[in-house]
Every structure is written in C-alpha cells, then in structure tokens.
Image 1 (cartoon, one colour):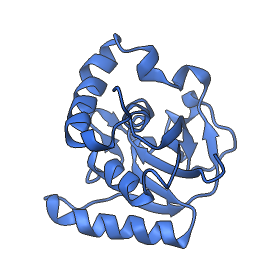
Image 2 (spheres, helix red, strand yellow; image 1 turned 90 degrees about the horizontal axis):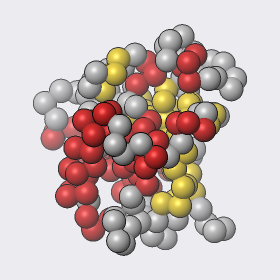
Image 3 (tube, rainbow, N blue to C red; image 1 turned 60 degrees about the vertical axis):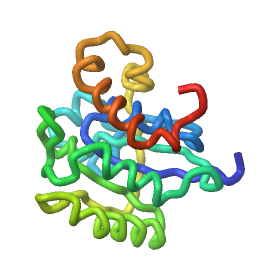
Length: 179
C-alpha cells in the first residue's frame, strides 16, 4: 500500500460519484466529503446551503500501477455532465459543481489535457473547475458508502442505478472482478 495515490473530484452528488469509483479495479477506497470552500470542517447541512463554497467531492485512493490518474480523470469526466455550471440533473448549487482538485502540476496538466481532448465530444463548453487541492473534509458517516447501504432507496433506484448501468457497460474492462 506504499504507492497509493489520492484524487479529489466533484461531479454533483457525492453518493453517485462514490458508487462509480468503488467499482474500479485499482481503487482501494472512496470517501465522500467536501473541498474547495471557505470554512473548516463543514457539516453536510451547511454545505447544502451553498454558502460554504465547498463542493461535494470524493477522495479516491488508488494504485497507479493498476489504474492511471489519466484514466480516473477520463472516467470522472464521462460519468457526469461537465458542461452544466453548478448543477447535475436536479441538484443545483455551487456544491454540485464539476471539479478536479489537483495535487501537482503533472495532475493539472493531465486534467487540462483530458478536458481539451473531450471537448469536441460535447456540444456545450466543458465548465469543470481545475483547482489546486487544499484540504478534504470527510462527510458524516451516513453519507459514506451510501449506495451500497441503500440500494433499494428511491434515489438510488432512480438516479444511481441507471448511471452505474451505463458506466459498467462503457468501462467493463476497468471493473473489479466479480462485479
């Protein structure tokens, strides 16, 4: 576990984003939380107001010998709508913005290159924020592993299941064995 890296992404509701990345080969852990805002240790109820400037994000711990940062960025960018400013579906507000929080100049260059490469595949301009990572705050326990604990919930059935189905079809070669 010495060579484990971290990536921080915002792509709307962190329950959806967490469920996507938990399925990937090489991903060791996914933690839902907040980043990019102005207050320390925000609570979910505070972030939901939009006044903290935090985004709902996931922290992905991955093994780069199994899956590359570039692959993770591509998957992030293609499993949510990176062209809608401060919204994903019915979720509206700065807390639902599309974001990549980079930890090095190399990660920044990879993120910018992926966005440039993907732009021609979208009618609208990609508005994903590419920002230097500062701090990650984990969300409360009830938000962790949400989909796997609540697969029968209406939100999971209506929103997460269709997203996972599409993701699994497109990225079946990158999925953990026995999914």
